[in-house]
Length: 211
Image 1 (cartoon, rainbow, N blue to C red):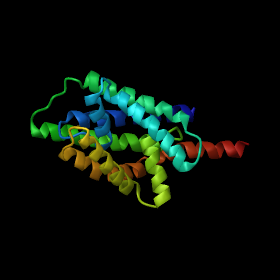
Image 2 (cartoon, rainbow, N blue to C red; image 1 turned 60 degrees about the horizontal axis):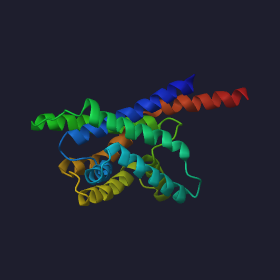
Image 3 (spheres, one colour; image 1 turned 90 degrees about the vertical axis):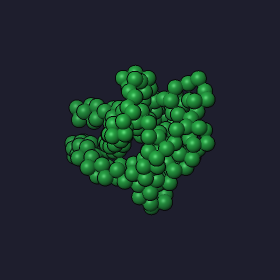
Image 4 (cartoon, one colour; image 1 turned 135 degrees about the vertical axis):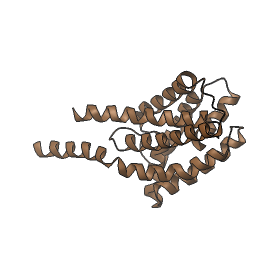
């Protein structure tokens, strides 16, 4: 039963992170670094942002397998599809007509989106289920380089922001803020979400004792 609740938490984390990404995009202050590539490509191709993101994540899935010298984690297709489809639901559905012109409204939406993204990512990373390749890549590099999650996030997202800018995506001041602050926010909220990890680690201990 605990794993059922953990899966609900897992899906909720993914949905919240998708909502956060959509709010950042709709704030008009600049798209997130990772999303800038998807937004940029969607501007040149007849596909949605979420569809481009799904394709990019599948490629990164193969890159991660090469880095770890393991088989590709095909189970990661679950969060890949969930992230891409829910992002599209927000961007082209409930938030499609969201257009805030006043600066305080834009910054309010942006701040809420940034916090929601960090919380959503941290919550779902604390469960034992498959990770989105970008977040898994962050964890791989964290282990291989002994650098903090925030440092890895800043470095990787800065590179993606540059690619997105070259593709013509609306990279702005908000993009820089996401690149600088999202990593530390994930680091902080990841510690806050520690009780979720205890929930499934306790379940494994109980199962081992019964065996």
